[in-house]
Image (cartoon, rainbow, N blue to C red; front, top):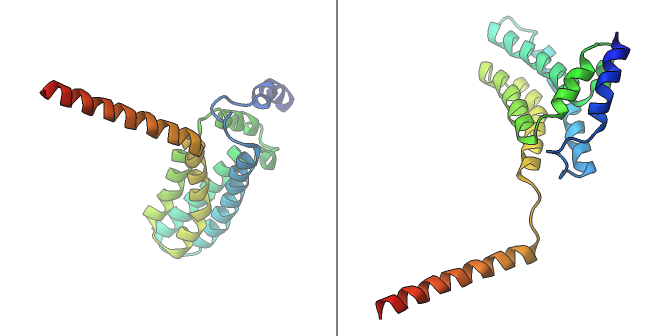
Length: 172
C-alpha cells in the first residue's frame, strides 16, 4: 500500500515547487536542517516540560512534542518512513509557499510559550521559531544589487525634479 502511495507522490515531490525557485540550494538545506534541529529541541524540551504536576506545563510539553513530530514530518519525511502518510504530508508541505511555512512554524512555536512561559519552553521552541523566521526571510526575496538600487534612486530623483519644474512653471 505504501508503494502505491509513494509512487503516486514521487513525481510531485521530485519537481521543484515554483514558489521556492528563487531559494538557493544551500538556503533550502539550511531551512531543512533548522527544522530538524528545531524538532529535536522541541521533543527533548517537551519531554522535560511534561515532568511536572502543573497542567499548563504538561499541555505545553505535549504541544511541543506534537510540534516536533509535525516539523519532522514536513522537513524530514525520511525520519518517518514507517508512517504511510509521511510522503503525502511532506509533498503537501513542499507545495506551501515560504511565507505560509513561516507563519505555520512560528505559530506552532509560539503556542507553548503562551501556555507556559518557562525557560524550557523558550529554549525548546527557539530553533523551531528560527525555522519559521528563515522561511519568512526567504519569502522576502533576495537583496537587490547596488547598481539597480542606484538606477531606481536616479529615476525617482529625476521624476521629482520634473514635478518640481512643472509646479514652478505653472506658478509663473
